[in-house]
Length: 293
Ligand code: 3HC
Image (cartoon, rainbow, N blue to C red):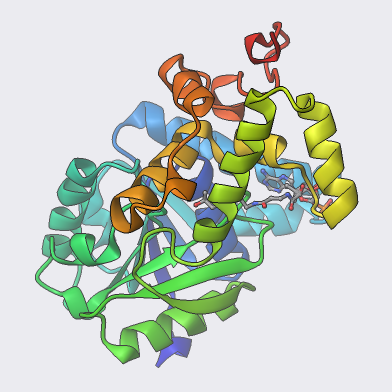
């Protein structure tokens, strides 16, 4: 059955959604990427094009291959354009109100057999599934940043997700070149439940001035062989996303390990969100970094 899957919808074309649309198109799927308005569509299209152009520049893709992949992605502001989708991935901001709006539309527009997957990292998939009339067809499909590169996806089944939906989603993940792990709908799933407290601990070490940000990152990359240190990773993930994941872990388990470090919370309040805002633990904009003071 899964071999017949062809048409995929991606709702939300931010850093994650654009990467997800690219991954599906590269794997041969026909993709419709939907954003809220034409300005957001333009930004999403630019993200996908920039990523593809980089691949051509590096000699990883020919221009013809790039054009063929891009030719498989349609961009739209109309969720109605997902009426023929076999499989939809939602990657909109982490607000239950926004998800409610999106899933109500998807439930109305998509055929009853369409699987609706959410890329949420900090909301309950069960709660999202309950927003639809087809909870057995709702599943988590959690990508990691940068989505085109990171091999892992978590396939998150809820108490209401049918085993068939979980199985098909894991097969789809393999078809796009990812390694799926099947996990239950608990705060942080598996990867973030381990990764985000580790980032939080590193921020605590930094806050206590035990070492500079560079020294903390070097200590971990060289000691543990991680590709990037925890503060660099926090900037990549987004400090707001780190806080959101910690807050759901705290809500669910009430374990002090999951209490966001005060510095992290203050940085988010100050709009220092990491790479996406130009400022985090490191400067991504060319200005001085107040977090270093
Ligand atoms: N989009 C597309 N491709 C990208 C990319 C991006 N944003 N960033 C890097 N790449 C590609 C590069 O083009 C390069 O491709 P190539 O091998 O075909 O030339 C490859 O990735 C390696 O990149 P670089 O050589 O520039 O740099 P690195 O070797 O340092 O790799 C990295 C960069 C892949 C980001 C690596 O540092 C890494 O794996 N870091 C850890 C990332 C991580 O842990 N992510 C998980 C975060 S948790 C999360 O997302 C969950 C969420 O819910 C919070």
